[in-house]
Image (cartoon, helix red, strand yellow):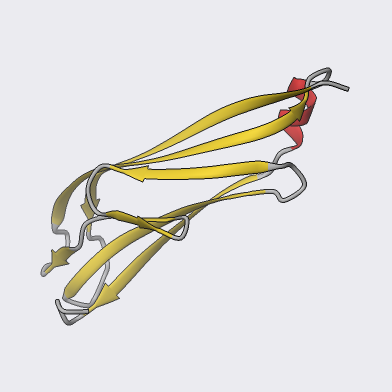
Length: 114
């Protein structure tokens, strides 16, 4: 059995945030993470165009929401690279068995310092 390394890249682009029904004025941040099934040996790398990366989670810049139906330009790009070790004789089948989960969270605070 020969093994090959495969690299998959996921890109998440945040262009704008449109406040439809948030009732709290305050400061918001979008956080994203990618989970890969532990059955397959892998290594996950994250990068981001503006704010930051910490412990496999990528953070957008913090933006303030004041009004209902307000639209904020975010213009951030999150990139997740997954390096997988796959069975070289059944690459397509092995890739279809890998489970990827993208997690998005919206965080809020009413204090800019937090």
